[in-house]
Each structure stands twice: as C-alpha cells, then as structure tokens.
Image (cartoon, rainbow, N blue to C red; front, top):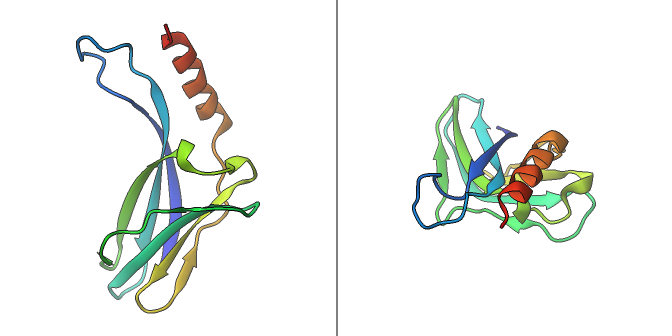
Length: 125
C-alpha cells in the first residue's frame, strides 16, 4: 500500500450559473491510497496531519473501503482544511489487517496557492 497526493484547482460553481458572483477557485488535493500488492486490502481510517504536530483532520470512510490489487481509493479534500500546512503534512491510513501506512511528507505547491489567491482577489467585488 502506498499513499500519494494530487494537486488541482476547482471552481466553487460553474461560470454559467446565473445570479451568482464570479466563481472562486479553491485548492483541491486528492489523497490516493493505492494497493500495489497482490491481495485485497481494507482501509479503516484515513487521517491527514501537519508534520509540525498539532491537530490533524479525519477523512475516514463510514465503512471499511475495499481496495483490490493494483487499484486505488481517491479522496478529494479542500487544502484549506489542512491545519498548519506550511511545514508539510502526511496522510495516514490504518488497514483492517492492523498495518499503518504513512505517505511521504507533502507540501502545498506555491505556484498553485498563488494562482488561487490571484484569481480570488480578481473576482471579489
């Protein structure tokens, strides 16, 4: 099992929605819990926490998630929900077999953070 992150931006609503202000961007992270093994695994809990310590955030599923061999379970989150991301953060999955899997330390991408901030300043009225 491995854990990695994908980075993207999303609009708060479609541009064509009438009577709404221009859409804002938000920084979206996808946590990819991947089964690189040959047996089916079950994820019981998923947690993201800052490497500097402090309170993390729980993204656990309501029921165990089955991940077949060579498959992944993607979980999309808003980067703004990660407390104190400046020093990096990790995702931690606990599996039904008792194994704990921790991602490498991840950081928000400066250029993507700047793009979101620049867009949102320009669309404020």
